[in-house]
Length: 360
Image 1 (cartoon, helix red, strand yellow):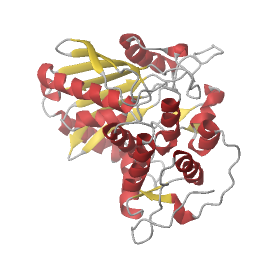
Image 2: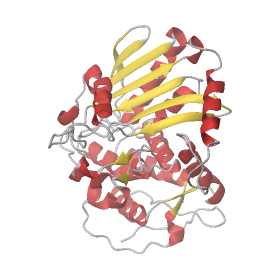
Image 3: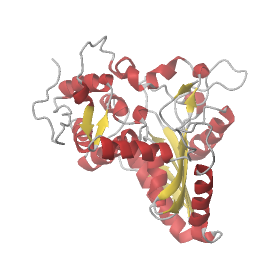
Image 4: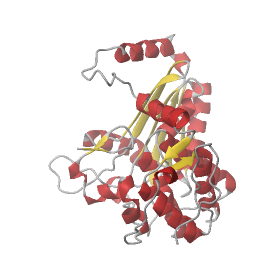
């Protein structure tokens, strides 16, 4: 069993050979196919300020024809994953987006549209655009419908990888709503007694507000039980009319469009029992106060590990993300290939190193 570093869940060895391609330490083998790159990276060069990481990712997308507003949303989405400690879904995914645009399998300028809708539901055509553009459009619509009808349920098709699920459920939290988001993905999970992977890790996030910003934020893959993954594929793939199960391409296949299906739900808690945030806070406080089997590590609730990761970035690392040597080496090479300025490391005085350069 291997911690996936993605959604607070776990990968299991029977997920198939493609599992290794999602590991951040194998970025180069997964996406670059450059062969072995040998470069010693100094410890100080691993620390990249959040603003600098966003600048770099935005520049890489814009040079590939992505509009500035789309590039900005994608860069902030990927940065949030790294900021929260989910390194597999942040900078690590940038090269995949670049390759999808280069191969013509993702339209960086596309904007989604409504196919049909009711007072509380909608079906969205993502038009093969960036997943974050489709996802934000869909969740905003779900939130608007929740304000008017109590519940908003939106499904999107013809979408692409949309980053971490909690990016969208946090949008619902901003309005004090319960939020749910999910997506189907490339086949990696094998049904019980089957020999062939059928479902993706198919992540799902559920977020419910507590008090003073202390919210329940679950973000997990569903690989621990293929029935969960199947349920997500029904919500995302079948209900939206997108690809599903084994019909979805592998992430390493850039010859066809992903055509992912995604689901976004917002619920106005005012339509239910009073004081739900207080009750959620009480539940979280009860769990955190429980005696731990490990005195050095207290009991946590979903969202606590991410909050700890963000505190480390802000309080101990001067607002910088600490990447791996593989990240730095690979993305210096990407910067060189695209002709953009590479990421510059932060210095002890919180300034950017102007002398940083890419590897020849």
